[in-house]
Image 1 (cartoon, one colour):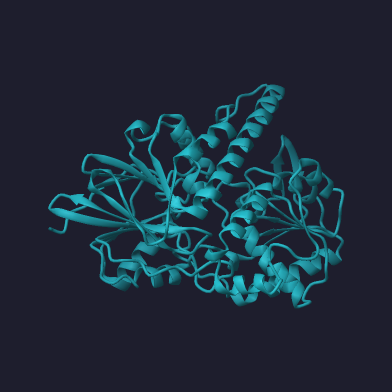
Image 2 (tube, one colour; image 1 turned 90 degrees about the vertical axis):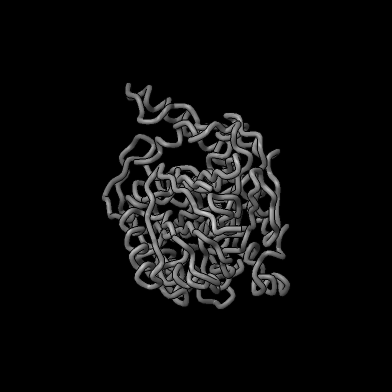
Length: 469
């Protein structure tokens, strides 16, 4: 068995691994690159002919893991995409939204570049369209957590609950290798324990090799117990100043976790009632997936819904699907606005930033990881001015961050997950982290366990040895 690393290697986004065994090829994830320095890779040819791939195994529905699936299908992939049912439904929503946004962005870029008489760094055409994304729908093959899927080349795959977001999974692949059979566990993105809405990460199974994420491999998150108090303080200060609280949020999971905390604060009377806008058609659609698969929510959330206190529907919450409804929000003050994209690299959040960044009474609150090179990271770095829609926008608003919201395990949680394996693996490969973070976590893991650990670079390939049998 051979594994090649074609994304999220010494950087965070673009997760994609090519697994070859028994004459067959499969991808684990097929993600979009979102760091500006690596976005050009989205336009490159795939590392193998899409016609030659027999399957894709998708860990979860974030764009950096599923975002290039429409391009793969468009270029000839005709196999199955295996995922849990919630992941398949959410990913389809995410991909169609991504295609629409790309079409709109391409149109605006063409207009702006023509006006300015220049050419952009990337093609002025969408990577794929909403129509291309719709074509992905016929490829979904849903699996239940714990079930084993038979793949080409004598390989099998099993999906294991890993937390992170609704429907997310780790994937264990077993198959032929030189010297017998081998197994490799792809962590996907590892979640956290005792979080609202979703189940805790499961215990990883035994595997000869592990490919693990390490996004926060050198950090410890804030105590989750302080999230509500910090959110209440920031919201109250902003609303009392007659400003708006603008929260860039991932439409999948993070927006819903925010609604959970806001609902809880209102129930406890820790914040005064105010209009709360979920200004994300995608997040609204994903809410319906949560409702259809309520059995996958954690027990506390199911009990809350049963008691009539759903975090997805409470007094003051308003949802806006239509563009004109979104635009009306910018005429208001003293409101909470939750909008995507979470890293401010597209979507309705850019318009809310345009109106609120110049306002000293407003607050931009980040509640998710901001990749290097994104607009969100730039704002967190403390710039005084940004370029948005071809114009210079002054940054007068307060910029704040609550890191405790993260859906990614921190260093200690990553160690908790991997060291709970029933037996030591032969080797661990650390991915899905900025280069220095990956190196630090690899060193920490090696020191703690004594296991061989390495950090692959983009396009590296490794041959996985069999264990006999």
